[in-house]
Amino acid sequence: MIFFRFVFFLLLSYGLFYIAYRYFDPGLNMLDIFRYHRMAQHPLVFDRDIAGSPFIYRQFDAILTHLFYQTGLFYNAPIEFTGEDINQRIYFASILSDYTALILTALLVSEIFDMELGRVTLLPALFAGVLCFLSFGTMSFILTGLTEAWGWFFISLGYYALKKENLVLFSIVLIISIFQREIISIIFTVFSFLLFIFSKYRYKAYNFNFLKMSIISFASFVMYVIYRKYLFPISGFSNQLDKNSLLSNLLNFSLTPKLIVTTVIPENIFMIMLLVLAVALIFMRDKIRDIFIVFKMDLLFSIVFTLIFLLMLGMATDIKYDIGRILHTITPIIAVLTAYYLYILNQEFDKNQN
Image 1 (cartoon, one colour):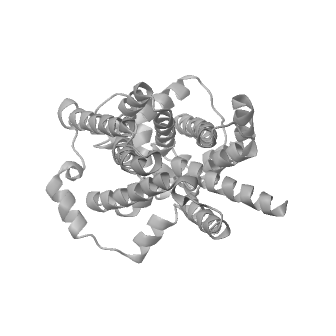
Image 2 (cartoon, helix red, strand yellow; image 1 turned 90 degrees about the horizontal axis):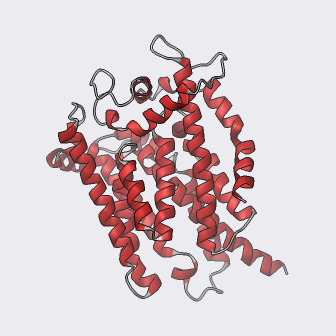
Image 3 (cartoon, rainbow, N blue to C red; image 1 turned 120 degrees about the vertical axis):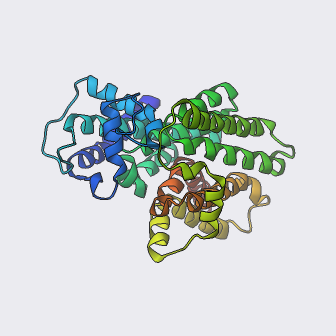
C-alpha cells in the first residue's frame, strides 16, 4: 500500500515540481532563498558572509541539497530564477530536495490518517495526502528552495511518533529538527502540552506521554539556544531571543490590512477543515452523543491554540508578513483532521442515502 501511495502521489504531483523549477522565481519576494542557496553550496560552514542568524543554523536542508547536487542529477532547461549568484544545478537540487520532502510528508499524512481511524483505507487516506499538494503554501513556501518542505516532513514524522507514543523516535526527530527549523521544537512543546491537558477529557485520565513529549520538545529548543548562542554564535536577529524585545514587539504590534491578508490566505487547508466541521456538526447534530470524542475536539483545540500561540510568537518576533508561513508549518496535522472530518461526514451521508 505504501508503494502504491508513493507512485500515486508522484504521478499526481510531478507537474508541480516541473513548474516550481522552471517558472517560479522565489527571488521576487523571498530573499531568504539567497541565504539558503549559499548554504547549500557551503554546508556546515558557519560564516556570516554565507548567512546570518538564524538562517545559518538550519543546516539539515543545506546538507541534503548539497548531497542531491553531488549526485549529478540535473535537468538543464531555461528557468525564471536566474542571476550572477545563482547556481542552476544547486537550485535544481534544492527543488528536488523539497519535492522529496513533500512526497514523504504526503505519505506520512496518509499513514497517520489510517492511524486515526484504526484501519487501512484507500481513498480517504489518499485524500489526506493529496491535501498537502493542494495547500496554498505548496507552491508559495514548500517547493521554493526554502526550509519549509523538510519542516513539514519533521512535523509529520514528529506527529507520527506522537500518535505512536514512541518517545525514542520522537526524541530523535525533535533533536534533528533543530538543525532544520527551530520552530518545530516550539510547536511540539505547545502542541504536546495541549494534548496532555485535553487528554483528561478524551481518556478520562491524563496521558503523561504527551507531557513527556512536551518536555522533550522544550529540551530540544534549549539545545538549539545553546547551539545558536554559545557553540556557533553568528550575528543576526538577536532580538528573537531577547525577552524584553519580544514583549515590546507584542505590546506594540500594529495590525494592517496587508498583514491580515498575508496571514490568513496561506491557511486554506485550515479553512477547509472548519468548513467541513461546520457542515458535519449541522448534518449530524441530532445523531452524536459525544461530540468531543467523535469530532476529536482534543486534537482540534490543540491545533487552534497552537495556531494562536504561533500567531502571538510571530507578533513578538516581528516577522510581519511571514506570520502566515509560520502558521502554515502545522498544515500536515491539519490535513489529517480535515480528511477525518470529511470521512465521518461522508459515512453519515452514505447512511442517509441507504
